[in-house]
Image: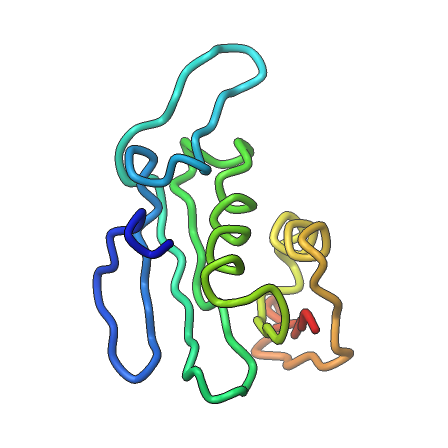
Amino acid sequence: TEERHKQTWDWEGHNEYTVKKSCLERIRVHTENAKRSVCGIVGVIRVVDGKDGNRKRISPIFVLPRYQNMGIAQKAIQEVEEIHGNDNWKLETILQEEKNCHLYEKMGYKKTGKTEKINEKLTLVFYEKV
């Protein structure tokens, strides 16, 4: 499965995948209005998996603004979960970023109840998928 990805580095269980349309057939995106495929690198997802039974972690994931709201982040998460296993995941995101929270909850991640206030405008919220 990993052959479909351009793995940019790997050490001590840290993997970063460039989300590249031409090599991730299952992440091909068609917009509702225009039948067009996106080719090239449109974002990055980094996975920390020590392969020791501890929780795997997504940190960070980003999609270039031009390609947001096309389902790319969702497909990228599905792909790395297929590669690394669908359960035993954790991540944190910014509570004030409602779109991020919505994405993770849609993907089956649940809030742990833990938050960490960084400053008056930024609070981290923690998620897990068991």
